[in-house]
Figure 1 (tube, helix red, strand yellow):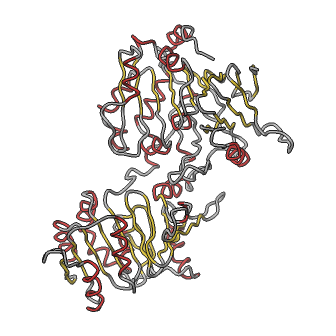
Figure 2 (cartoon, one colour):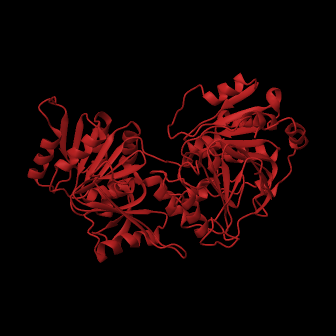
Figure 3 (cartoon, one colour):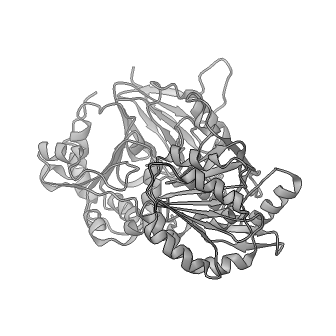
Length: 549
């Protein structure tokens, strides 16, 4: 089916001047709830006591880190242990000043500031117990630590002092919960963790008092490595991650160990810390999705939702006409990228110009503060008539824009009667519930911490893409069985729905699958309706208006 776009222009012009309040596009998402610092720029290695000090060398080899090393040693660490680490960091190719080893003095903050100023790697070797007083003496060095990480440096903390790098730790000496330096953000780390009742109790006592915190238990002879936002394990044992239970969710527990095979599922050796931090916050909020979500309804404007894998014939022309036509449209492209910076020239913008669009640009940021306050970034959205979201991994959109001023201005495009479109990730992100937003892999359709991350241009639905081509039918069945209040929508590649009010029209080469758990499910029948191009479906009433042959 081809779109004929001329009908859309007068419809657009009748609503583009609308500025009054619209319940269907209220901006209720909250900026302050979600992490701002999504990753670190350097590397942190937090290790329990190591009888095998070669584990440290292995962490550096795997991280491809090298350079001058500064080693800071607590006073009560035996000299033979220090010599082991000297051998780990030193090689025959190193110069005389490649490694500096210092015993900690009564001015540890000053030592740290000096060492990180001219060293690529800081290794901090500690004792078996941490007292809250140590944190207080080191607090002045936090800025030096943070600056070192921001410049791409590496911090290695070995022994109980590793716990000081987290937000909270259990002080054995003071038998209390103490504040750390929060370099491993929003976490409580426990070293020499043996999963005994006592060890679990100490860690869970911190989470009970600070439920927006991720608990991490690191076994003896084991190190966790945080690079960017991903955590992995090196060594002989495992790291166990915990989130506190609440009234409707049990404890979340996951253990990872050093990767042994390239064929292993990534969930066995990798953690996305930002996902866990988001889930910790999410568990302190009202349940989501709500038992009675808002009705799927686009009060003003139009949504164009594409299943990826190619554009239906004529659909981009239709999108441009909905935005006001080639002369009047003001289009903004939003790429989906995990990188801080993208190319200055975006192919989608160039394509629009080639199609005759006079006003087209793009915006991109991974900085939530910038997405909330940067006037230059916000400017194109203030009078935009159309936005197009690119493909990729949809959690990137949630990280960058959810709850920001950019997000509010996106919703205003619809309030003015404009059009929002997107393909693949740009399809799923349009719903209030965000499907398939797992940062590690994309095999789980429900991602704790990101389900609340959709930009909410339409409520009451969950949208998945590349649907039949990647065999995702059972995934959507799983989602709507868990959340029967949501209408599941699975869109095939090179296929789309155009949504106005509550009416969706199918276009393209494939089909759109609608999963409605308000209807009974029979064991001998499909649990969805699949509609081809030319069909229409009422999302609010959950009924087929027209089924094309």
